Length: 264
Image 1 (cartoon, rainbow, N blue to C red):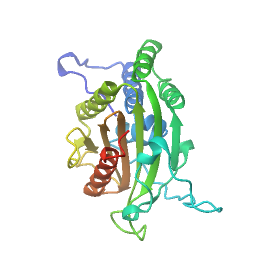
Image 2 (image 1 turned 90 degrees about the vertical axis):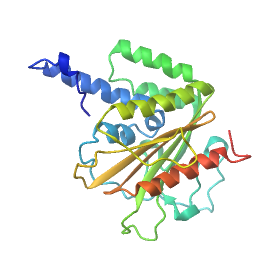
Image 3 (image 1 turned 180 degrees about the vertical axis):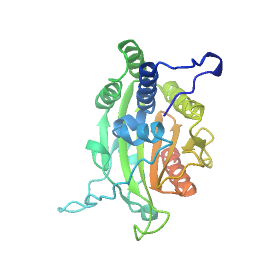
């Protein structure tokens, strides 16, 4: 990802070290801003956004065991119970999200610490400012799960992988403001284009890489909030990604959180 300076102040010969530093700061800030992606290893979404104009490489189609050897997996509890379950609409267990595996739930303290770790590449003054912002959000928990879209065969053209991260915060206004700032930030990058709308959820926003760039793998990022839960979804597939199908997944996830008796 590159930053486009204002034409009126652009120097004829830019200071290359300064430009490099500026790009690094923006890239790290993106990782910090996208709350859910931080917990999922930052690489999922930060690389999607920062490298939107480059081929991100081949996806990993590795599948952990869906059912442990001693029987059925335990029923999800707490925030994790709001995640879409495996099996519905043919969704299968997806690839690991870094160190967290394909299905994980974190305490508020652990999620907060992870977000602060993602700020290490920033200058000290900027890092401290963002750390204070993270503390103000009062994160109470985080749950994440990865999927492979419903398909009997991985050779089906529209198959994709998706990681869904739910970040619950004690500060509801912070959740709303963060979802909005994420969407505004990504829209202002210019290198991304708007993705499909999410039916029934006006506050949700999705983004895709530039349409005129040739690539083997394409990614789609969506952000939204329901009550005190921030929802981030990152999907990847062989280009072109089935954006409507991913939007359907996002809608189902948001509807599940909103469903009577399910809301946090």
